Amino acid sequence: MEKHKLPIKTFLAKFFVNHELQDNEDIFALGFVNSLFAMQLVLFIEQEFSIAIENEDLDFENFKTINAIAGLVERKQVLLART
Amino acid sequence: MKIELTLEQKDNQAAFRDFVDREIIPDADRFDLEESIPPELIQKLGREGYLGALLPKEFGGKGLDAIAIGLLNEEVGRGCSSLRSLLTVHGMVAQTLLKWGSKSQQKYWLPRLASGRVIAAFGLSEPNIGSDAKSVETTATSDGSFYVLNGQKKWITFGQIADVFLIFAQCEGKPSAFLVESDRPGLSIQPISGMLGVKASMLAQLSLNECQIPQENLVGRVGFGVSHIAATALDYGRYSVACGCVGIAQACLEACTRYANQRKQFGVYLKDHQLIQQMVTEIIINLKAARLLCYQAGYLKHIGDPRAILETSIAKYFASKTATQAASDAVQIHGANGCSSEYSVQRYLRDAKIMEIIEGSNQIQQVTIANYHFGF
Ligand SMILES: Cc1cc2nc3c(=O)[nH]c(=O)nc-3n(C[C@H](O)[C@H](O)[C@H](O)COP(=O)(O)OP(=O)(O)OC[C@H]3O[C@@H](n4cnc5c(N)ncnc54)[C@H](O)[C@@H]3O)c2cc1C
Image 1 (tube, each protein chain N blue to C red):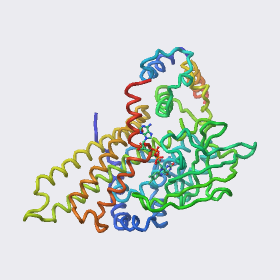
Image 2 (image 1 turned 90 degrees about the vertical axis):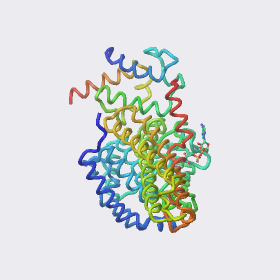
Image 3 (image 1 turned 135 degrees about the horizontal axis):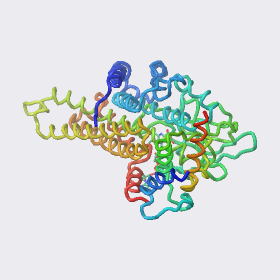
Image 4 (image 1 turned 90 degrees about the horizontal axis):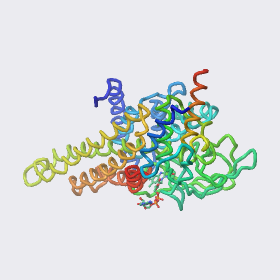
């Protein structure tokens, strides 16, 4: 999971230019998120980690923090490896 | 780096162009005047696979890549923006269900959308809500086995003939998306006429009055209606509109080239007047730039790059401005003829103006682009 964090941080840093995001900081609570950002985050996760974000992944808990995103990626990759 | 269409894309482009020249252009001014598109033409679009252009073959779609989809929208837009609007809204719903639909929604709806047996429309805007989409006033309340929808939707493209609507409503106080079939009791549909442009896009106002839909008609999850569901639809919509605008500008260029070659004033053809040449060169240059922005957005979509979202917004902004300016200049070059219904350029101008307002107005695109540039 740790190894996923760096690319996630690098991606988010392009948006959060005036704020250093902590691993456990709630992105949505910061009130920054717009729809352009939300879909770019989905595309980024899909392209970077070669997984598909689907209907059942739509849970704000999955996208809330750097840790949460890394956890989602980890779970999806494990699932993918099994199939 | 290589900016060139593949052979397959070129073949598709030629087929689209031929279809538009044959089936659409001869009647497009009449569609505009009559404010409707004949059902037979929509069936033909379906038979050609154009209504399922973006859907994978496994769902009966044509499985075209993003660039080819752009070319289809450009060509149809060159002929008739109203009909291109059908590709836009129908495609927005198809794209959304492909990305966020449940397995059973996909299995049921996608083959029907792909063939055109079912026409889909997009219901976000309301009498009081346009740009600020997350504030829609329509509500959806769950009574355990059903959602009950109440509210109004306005300016719904092809709402007069759609079989199913993707409707956005507040559920538990959060924006959410639902599929509402047109024959659901509690849904009434009133046609809207007399718009400035895209007059044949058969707009409607929808009234939802205690309209009951099953729980499984929720698309995605409660609360994701705008951030993910509408965002997916609108991203496709912006791409479709941007490419359609390239088509309008191309139509303007072709009309001006024809007219400037046959109309004489002061003893010479219009094409020999340098001020006419100046307007035509502006159209050529902006058209090329807009097309390249669309190709770039299409390419990024094709490879699933997150930058595709912003680049599509940029392409839509630039292409819609280009189309409006090109159409305004085209009317200028045509003089009084350009103002008459005998020439299509007046339609292009009316249609192009609409493109600066829909799928996020140009001000909203500017806000988006600036937000991205300066960051949070
Ligand atoms: C022909 C046509 C077809 C349409 N089809 C559909 C459809 O199929 N489905 C659907 O849901 N909707 C549809 N619409 C509605 C369309 O999406 C809206 O018109 C659009 O979102 C703009 O909303 P509005 O018209 O309410 O303008 P408003 O949001 O009220 O905006 C009015 C003006 O204020 C500007 N403005 C708003 N907010 C800001 C801001 N933050 N900063 C600066 N300027 C701002 C806008 O750019 C605009 O110039 C259609 C509209 C038309 C004209």
